[in-house]
Image 1 (cartoon, rainbow, N blue to C red):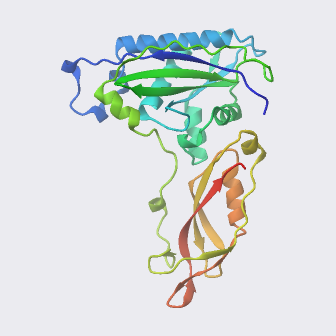
Image 2 (image 1 turned 90 degrees about the vertical axis):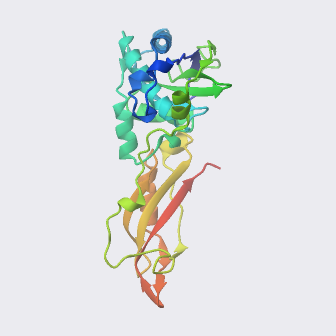
Image 3 (image 1 turned 90 degrees about the horizontal axis):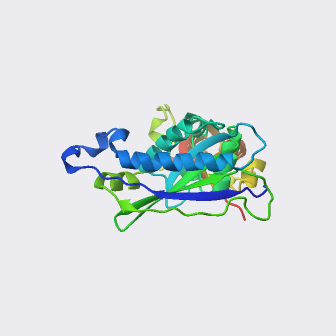
Length: 305
């Protein structure tokens, strides 16, 4: 993949909630109560700066398409409930400053993750975020990093994919405009709460008459021929690394059937995994010395050498 230009804008957010207005149950607060007017002003200003930087990129597109991916805790892939909330608000304010830009609705990212049964934790690099954004029609993407240190919180916003490719130097120099402010107890809690998870749970699988669960009433199947799935070209180009988790029934004949995706991966890797597992062969699980069908969980890791 050709090298993309990138730059950073950083701006601390002030989140001070008067004690008289603290709610009894923080988890029930609306997102509007998290940000003070000053905090909103800081985020609005940051969105305005980001929009202006994109306009200054001299892109070939008359109206570049922009997608806000998410705001992560410390590094890409570490989801945060606070980060997702702020990313939503940032996207809204970016839309308000969108003259000459097409701000894509973040719902398309949610739909993408849901369709692929994947999670924000799979978005572990800027390359992956940019490639996923491009798959959804974006010219470039915005992602952010949240930090908390010594009772303070700051937000750094990164813009990726806006500008000419394959340049010796980025067209934007890295700039830091950082201010740090005290963080409230509620903000601290939301900071460490994980963001939305679009994977599925094993207990969602309907009961299957005659099928045992591995290790519960029957033994475990043993894989005797398990070829690894092939990386897709898109996943390799994006340097994606992650896992696919399947729940399968290993039949009494030692074949994989009734495949259920618990956690998928982007770039077509879920399909690649299913195709590979369908050709796997097993020694079936035994019950009282006889082969029986069992449901077992399979995790396939994709790692670049």
